[in-house]
Length: 49
Image (cartoon, rainbow, N blue to C red):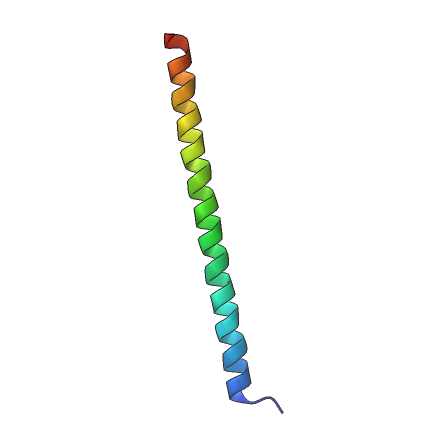
């Protein structure tokens, strides 16, 4: 039968993967937001010239 230790290892691995995935999503979202803000400022600058 499976030991409790085995399940604990799987559970910890799962949590680690979920945390890493959420970090990647946060980073991607941050980069996208920064890019949108920069392009928005570029759009504002264009009519001034």
